[in-house]
Each structure stands twice: as C-alpha cells, then as structure tokens.
Image (tube, rainbow, N blue to C red; front, side, top):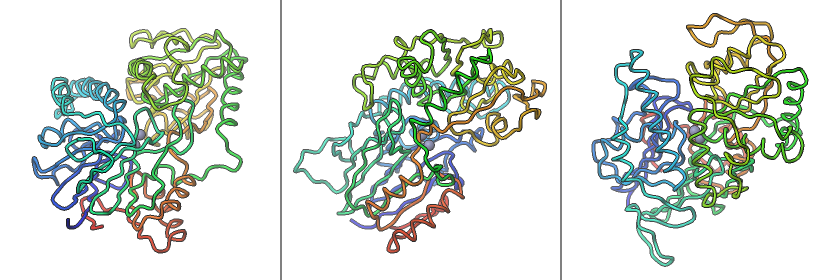
Length: 461
Ligand SMILES: [Zn+2]
Ligand SMILES: [Zn+2]
C-alpha cells in the first residue's frame, strides 16, 4: 500500500489548536481540528494551509473540547468530500460548542477582531449533516461503512472510550497490517461520571499520545477519594466562616463532574442537603445535554439526571454582577480560566477581596489567564480581573485541588509500556511535559523511537 506519514498541523509544540494529518498510501485522514484557546483570529487555527483543498478523505474528531473541534467548520469548508467521524456524544456536544463559539466570535468582532466570526451558525447546521455517529468498539472503513467480523479492507478504524469527557475516544487505525493508535485526550482513572478509559492492549506499531500532565508527578499518597474529602472540608470551612464558594469551571466536562460530585456529597452528608448550587451559561446547556444522553452514554451513574436531582439554580448574565453572596452557597460557573466577560470572572469581583469567601480551583488554568494569575498570587497581593476593572486585593481564601480530566503521567507511561509501540509520537503537551516522557520512555523502551513532531514536517512511519 505504500508509506504512512504523520504531519503535525499545529503551529507550535503546545496544547493549542490540535490537528494531525495521517497519509496512508493515497488516503489522507485528519485527526481533530481544534481552535487555540488563547490566540485570536486566523492565528487560532491549525496550519490547514498544508492541506490542498478537497484532498482529505476523512476527518476524525476525538472529543468536543474547543482545542480539538473548534476549527472544524473552517476545515470542512475546504475539504468538501471528507466525511466526519465522531461518537454520538461528541456530535451533540460539538454542535453546542461550535454555535457558542460563533456567539463569542461575534462579540469579539464588535471589539475589533475583524476576521471574526471564522464561521457562521448556518455553516454549522449545514456541515453537521456530514457528521457520522460512530459507536465505540466497532470496525469501520473510511466511508463510514461498518465492517462485518470477517470483512477486511485496506484501511479501517475503530473508536475506544477515552474516559476524558462524554463521548471522548481514542482511534485505532489498521492499515496494511500495521496499527496506529491516537489517544486523543485520555483519562485512565475513573472520575465521578466518566469511567476509566478502555484502550486497546494489543501491541501497537505507532502510538500518538497526549502528554498534558507530563510536567507534574502525582504526589505521594494521592487518591481521588482523599481529594474529594479535602474538597468537602474546604466547603465546610468556607461555610463556617460565613462565606460562599466560587469554583471557576470549564463548561464542558468539569461542570458536570462537579455537579455529580455535589450530588454524592449531599447524599453522604458531606454537603448540607439544602446547600444552594448555582450554574450558568454554556454550562447549563451542556448539562442538559449530558442528562438527555445519559441513558445511552458510556459513564457511571447513568440514571442520574443532574438538573433534576442536583437542582442547581441558573445564573443569567445580567444578575451575575449583583448576586447576593450569602453564606453557604456554591457558585460553579464557567469559564474555568476566568476569562474576561464570563460568569466566573464577573462573580469573582464580589469574592476576591472578602476574607470569609473561598475561591476553589479544581483543574488546569493557563498561567496567563486571570485564573492562572490568581492561582499563583500570594494572599494580600493585588490582582486584576479585567482591563476595565480596578485591581483588587486578594483577601479571600484560595484552595487548589486536582480533579484533572487527563491521565496522570504515570498511567500514560504504564500504557505505553503495555502496548510497546515501535514508535511513539508525543503530542498535546508543553515542552517540559514532552521532555519528561521522552526521557522515561527512552529508558523503558530502548527499541522504541520517541518522536516530538516539529509542526509542518512530515514523519514517515
Ligand atoms: Zn479535552
Ligand atoms: Zn485537549
């Protein structure tokens, strides 16, 4: 069949606008089509200029986070004959995420980003007809036809549950007697809603692996159960001080995981049963979707309907500036980075300078974002939430927890050792994270070639 080449279509070695090209003989498959969370305009897009128009045969989307799906309509505009493969969950969530992205871009255009919006609501509606629902653990060909057990084709693919967020998958491609596995974003440990990933365990030829947490060792003695108890204690402390708690959360994934955890906390008495919980904006819409898809989702607690059973109050954009910060309330609001003009940023103004309130971080925040800056600030230091707001003294309590949706580096290392690939391609990580993997994996697997793909340079497998 000929050679297999991989090209990194991101613009830098980082977690940004993820997109990768696999050329297998004459066929071209694009894995993911993200949008950079920090860049603006065309610079936020992957380097899709490397793909000639209408030269792509199929597009695979691993999950609905912005850094994997955010530029899909732009890619589809130039690749008109490529079907787009994703799970049912990813499809439903992606449509909401992409429509929301248009709304955000329209606002930014009003503020002067002239190239926005990069696509329109109508374009998403038309494009989504080319999305195919692909279930996990079934073999398909590149036209999206399911293969019967004895049927063999030149190139086939199969999805595996990645345990990261609803609908997330890893993709196994079998071509010419070779196996290539792309992890997407993965979690090998169970969360409150998501189950642990179930990935192929057969020996692989090539493993394309995310490396998000490569720069952080898991602390000795760390367990999720222990972290949950520590979180419950932080709530109790804040409530005893007569304060409320603000959790800035990613709308997709983290919001639903935390609501499920609050449900468990109330049942086990770790939170008062009547403790008011507030969510808002995109988080509410995505939670509705999690409830609707629950009976058909690969997850734990499939009978749990978050909006009914946790019964959160919904904060509208207007009331955010005047919310009463009463003792014992939990504000679980997006965005996770506390970006300007989001609910978590607006409500933080009411929280930051009050010693009785708590600000609780449960996941990753870009160091350059408002959340990242507050995370690294010392108590009493001055912080600024947005250009229009006067700086504020940081007087509230700040607590940090690890409820990451990404696998620990130790689990990813163990997985690589289990499948013993001939080549490992490191993606979706900062340079330090990739360096750690390069170092340990070269020792663990001396016969394996470890590759950090330079953006735009094809690598032959
Ligand atoms: Zn993700
Ligand atoms: Zn990602």
